[in-house]
Image (cartoon, rainbow, N blue to C red):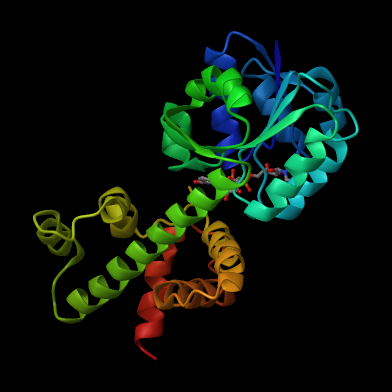
Length: 288
Ligand SMILES: NC(=O)c1ccc[n+]([C@@H]2O[C@H](COP(=O)([O-])OP(=O)(O)OC[C@H]3O[C@@H](n4cnc5c(N)ncnc54)[C@H](O)[C@@H]3O)[C@@H](O)[C@H]2O)c1
């Protein structure tokens, strides 16, 4: 079996390296940035010159690119060579309806598409301990599960095409809401003279303890916002979530608060930094 991997960014680089190291199969890789392909070749992967080349050569193809439009561009090429027996697994975080529509077009070729977005960030991608939320055909899921296990340690099948992405967007927006609470109340605590470390220690003994503050404490302490998951990507996910929930007529004030913080972060040029940089956006907004 030959495995393809398209998109070798913050996540794809580490994930494809785990496939090379653990799957026992040849892994062919492609990115529009040739330097990223060369880097993976130095770690045992095989280079491809285009998306179509990957699609033509591989039995299972993973894609890990930023947004819906990038996945649509990748699939425009994969669809020209898709065939029965092939499984295409998009692991990017994109709009669920876009993914489901692509899955229907893939099905018409005889191939199968799954959405399998991931939770947790680059450290878990390196460690091979990501979570996967999978939507689509159960048989194809069973077929690719051993490959997902090379990259992740918690793998959940949610249902039909798009449901993996619905769950992923729910997950990320919940993180954004928790983060908003941490950012806002930390701003208040510091205003009244409580330093970050005391705040974190106090919270860790109470009912407000949370993974976000624990995992980002050192980042917040050092104010080093080198991206593991960019503010731009979380802004994108909140946007997809609102597109998904808007037509359902749901009123979600917490989501709107998180959206306003990310809009501010983007408008003030923080989008390329780690999403924990919203700490600065909330501080800024608290001053009016
Ligand atoms: N970084 C994280 O912590 C994290 C966690 C979970 C999910 N995600 C999601 O994973 C996806 C990728 O995130 P990332 O942080 O790795 O982004 P990234 O920007 O670091 O990497 C994306 C890569 O895709 C490549 N690319 C774009 N268009 C392409 C195309 N048409 N063909 C081939 N390559 C193409 C880019 O050159 C880049 O190397 C996003 O949807 C993001 O929301 C990220």
